Amino acid sequence: MSKLISALTEGADRIDPVSVDDYTRIGGFDALKKAAAMNGEDIIAEVKKAKLLGRGGAAYPAGNKWEHLLHIPETPKYIVCNADEGEPGTFKDRLIMDKLPLKLLEGIIIAGFVFKAKAGYIYVRGEYRKIQKKLIAAIENAKAAGFLGNNILGTGFDFDIHIVSGAGAYVCGENSALLNSTEGKVGRPRIKPPHLAEVGLFLQPTLVNNVESFVNIPLIVNMGGDAFLQTGHPDSGGTKLICLSGHSRNRGVFEIPLGKITLRDAIYDPELGGGIASDKKIKFFHLGGQSGPIGSVEQLDTIYSYTDLKKTGLAVGSGAIVVMDESVSILEYLQGVTEFFIHESCGKCIPCREGNRQLLVILQKLSTPGAATANDLDTLRLLIRTMTDASFCGLGQTAAAALNSAWKLFKTEFEANVRHEEKI
Ligand SMILES: Cc1cc2nc3c(=O)[nH]c(=O)nc-3n(C[C@H](O)[C@H](O)[C@H](O)COP(=O)(O)O)c2cc1C
Ligand code: SF4
Image (cartoon, rainbow, N blue to C red; front, side, top):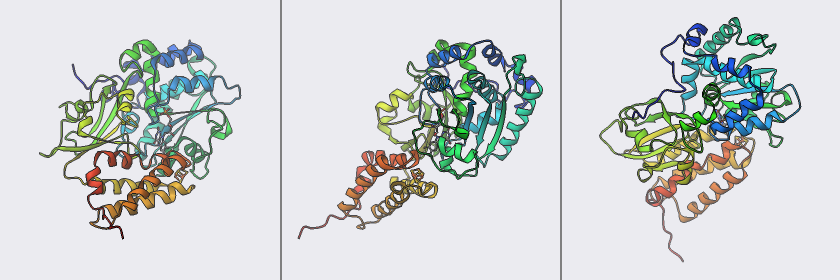
């Protein structure tokens, strides 16, 4: 059986991405027509049965999020699609927006129907300029065909979708910072609670989901939640788009069934990663973006599912898999990760703003023979705990996740240069 499948990505490369005729020829907007004849509760029941976990990184159950929002009486409600895709090593949402923008719109419009929302917003990474234009063309074409705009499919429901461009800040992918940025404010995270479902965009009830999460919605509506669940893992239905990069022989986006293949398959199967590009061996892999954990060769036989990866201290996260061969120094790699977080910290809270800088100082000392002492390792431990527990948002809370996991796996490398001071 092929480990590479095409469910979400069905039709990509076969159609003109912005042509409604092409899209409807491959079954596009069938789910929207079906959803328009259903009530919101029934659609949410299917999403819950499907056990769709949010694909943006946090893996929050989409059905629970939708149910919560449905029961909030305040109106108007807004639908927001997180297309910021700022996590290094992650480029799957780009593929969807580039090849199947109408499918993304269909998922967002179905959400609009469920919540009788006033409008939808897609917050797109600033660097994706061409894709923003493509999305605008897709929106215009969907409107002209009656799938978007006023009186959608003759139901009397009016719904429009707007494109908002990010400006290159990683923190704006955090959902509350994203809403601030969409409102034209400084893109910094908000305090939570209140939950965004209650006080979201323009202080109104709001749904925020990732691009890949929305694109799963037409599939779930078409095939039903139970059938969707069968295509994945019993705890999380569907497929996952993974992004292979680094020293992987094949780099790019691949669609795999959740829970049915191992990490080794993802990295070595000829249809997927195809192994290491050089004649060297793999040393480690970094999952789910810079904020995710690092794994070692011993963990390669773990099943790629949210549940199995979590059991071994790993995580799906955004779907990124950065593969590194044995030529890479783990301490140098982690310095690169930490420099990223120093650059992207918004500076609002001390554990993240100062903590990342201090992590880098210690990592540099650990890389220099005789520069670090056992005290530095104690400080490192304390820093990791403080940043994880006391940072204001997910950026600071996860900035040391790679370091923390790598330390356990590569203890010898971490401690090789530590100076053992003699007691006086
Ligand atoms: C610093 C930071 C950056 C994030 N960047 C993204 C992003 O680029 N895209 C995304 O979908 N979610 C991102 N998230 C997660 C979002 O806050 C949120 O959980 C997600 O958009 C919810 O959608 P989902 O439930 O469909 O995954 C980020 C979180 C943090 C803390
Ligand atoms: S953890 Fe604090 S400083 Fe870091 S990005 Fe979040 S709010 Fe800003």
